Length: 560
Image 1 (tube, helix red, strand yellow):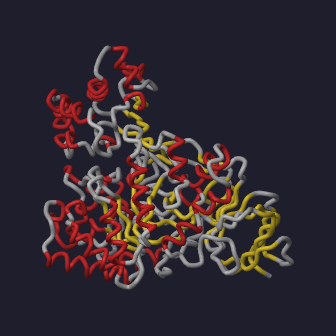
Image 2 (tube, helix red, strand yellow):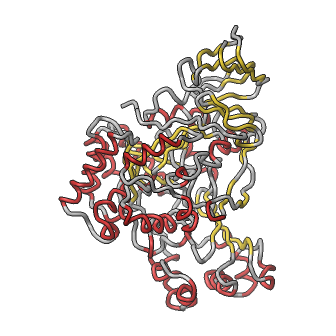
Image 3 (cartoon, one colour):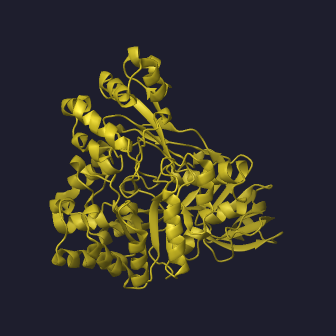
């Protein structure tokens, strides 16, 4: 008798072929048979009755590095169909980390990834220093979903250079030390090396995240160290000043794939993302494998002026970075500061999150009752009614409200025709959930359900089979996840059972379930009937099941 059989499911096998009605048998954590009517006895039978069964979603862009040390469920991702999460993206990791650098590491995450410093201080279990020790801790504790981990550039830099990591280029000797750490991390099962050159990525006090100080020579040396064993993925969140041609040179010299993030459509500079995708396509035509990480979600963020991530990438905003309380209020009220921001917003020469689209910025919630009449209104409308400049209007509302006003902004990826083209590009990879980060700003952990529901079913931008392939076997092949991403005999039984007529993600809501009672935004699954990781059920229609099993594996072996 085997463990489990799904009867009469619409099998979407992850390879892109036409879905078919059939049975899927599971035993010992693996799929053992797939067929029209399997003659097997099972300890448990799931009567799928036409529900769709596909491989579990592989989320290739998450930031669960800190959360996983206190929350092995990786909430909310497994309940949203994610069975494998790749952590360490952008190089914003917590390992390696010397004890003396822990506070700096946490404060950097608070700034660049929108994490609560109180939650990080109360939650992170620092039972490690090296990357290998971190991996050993993850393996010993287990997790609900499978996990693969990048070694992160900013952490490696800080480990070698301390406070100087965010202030200067590295010496040749320091680069050699960093190479040794990257080699060691690869030996301990890192999926690759991740970094960022994006100007919006700032740490404590507005200083650049350490990887942004790296020279091209340093980047090439570390990517080379990663690829010496003939495996590994180089993941980079690219700033506008980093040309695709340089990334192609790294792919050519190492023979390793390069994952380029974050390719999001900007309505003010609508050709920019397609120029990058065209350059990526040309590199692939020359035999050098590059992929662009694209999102199927409109980038919408909640924020306050106490921590305004959408504008912190502006050069003119630097006087406000790292300030709080009365000091921050004084900067925001300063006319010269405002004029500088206004002037920069009039230019459209570089990629940035916010581009003066004031009709897409709304007041969500105010703390003062006398300001409540502005809730659910756009800054553009408020400014027009008052005959004032929109920037002044937003800043003055926030200052009057003691910087407690919650705003929301639709920033990027709002043109669905353009996003549909990006999703179907032959060298894009559907990703960028950022699950585990920006917890108070937004939550795109349900990106896979959104692709299946909104883009496939509602808009018809791609078939159900292609949407499933984009979420499963495609990232598995890029990352080298052997035995995952398809429904076939011998494959891991990472499975998602859902109703294709209703699948999607619910509205965002705020919960207070982080350490120290900190808040985060979350969303619930719609149309999901069950999620299995390595053959064990971890979620049902109501979310994570009681006493959720730690069914996930720490993935450290990858196909070259």
